[in-house]
Length: 86
Image (tube, rainbow, N blue to C red; front, side):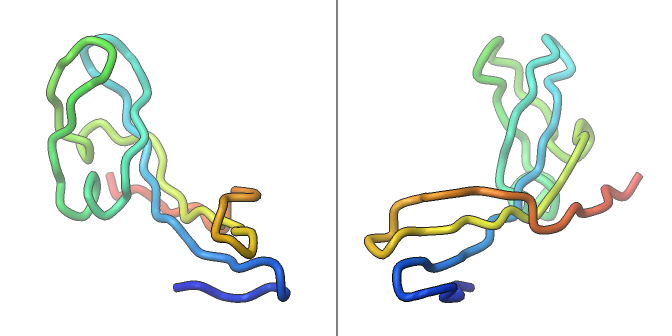
């Protein structure tokens, strides 16, 4: 969903989740639907360990992404925090 805030800015949203690699402790950010809703496995870019994103999630939020008139990212902010089901 994209909303216009002015003639020179559009706003879109991104669902993001954060998990921590159980092997090395590196935080990993991934699309919320991919990591949480699909319960996908991800690979740690630091140690190469493959783990389940949902089982190791620490946070999830909807981000607001403000775009310039040529669709370049201008600002990113937290729109809404999403509770992680335990």
